[in-house]
Image (cartoon, rainbow, N blue to C red):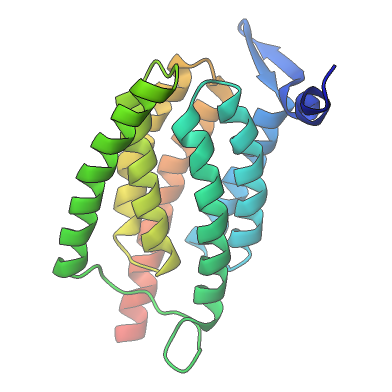
Length: 210
């Protein structure tokens, strides 16, 4: 057994089997930390960022061993964004105060749309040329949507929740197709948490403006 196999063993070892589908300990770790992270984001609790980093590490291994290479690489970017988001939420406001919730401007939407189209097309062609991915377009569009949503989350943009909802609608059937049933269930739960977060952030912003 190689050193890499030893390192990956805790993540890839089967934990439980339900209806013929095997769930690994890595998927369970991703499920628990992911659900906790999104719930903390919805509550505007900055501890979502370190919990999110643990979630990223678990999913990095899980997705790499499931052939979802773009989603696996995405976790590395998430870690960098999480470190920035942690600082921004605590010190990113005027005078290094806590960051307030704001709306996405029309200029930012144009920038997001351009990055979204170019990023999705470029990543899909890269996956088709350089990897054995069986779902390059779905992997690419969810990757780009997730990155744009995370950027919005680091800046506390209200519309970041809509981007997450769009990504989750695709993620649920994608993960089910790849045999990651627990992760598919997790992302179905994320949809509910996104609605909860959107409602909470909207109310919080309206309360500050009142």
